Length: 237
Image (cartoon, rainbow, N blue to C red; front, side):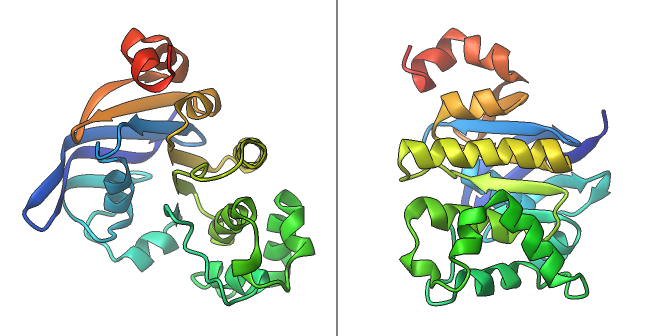
């Protein structure tokens, strides 16, 4: 299987503070990969490095074999990388549908109505609330909106930063079920940073564990889940 994403000896820094140290990471085309680690391990920084947001990087980052490191964030998005950041990033005073139209801005020639129908198929609650201000949605609905807005890009790779954070268990279960359906139906590759390691390892086919900005473990998700150190640190076993 070919790789949609490759990080080769990638360092990432905020000013003089280096957070990532020569990490190597691969996401196969159509796969879901979990990126686990304790707070401060560098998970969010890894996603920002891929999107070239807020961090300085060295090393190679390749999308479908083509280098994207050093490209502007907007260009990376046009090439098919959609980033759902921590905190969701919804525009609270705008309606649900206005938020979704913003997600399609890098592909203005595509039919908006067709794309809206597509994402509403995954998130029917958003169709019901299309004229509602985003700030009045529940936390779970706002997270759905953030993912739906990213889907409006028609991405090849979806970067997800803590999609379960602060949400009720039922909302989390619904969102992860939808993510599985999106991957199954559209073969969109996903790199998932997630505090709920159990859910992440159930969804993903492969996993990486970061410790202090370095890759400490990698392998099939089932094998990582069975590792005693992972079970103690992340699964409470």
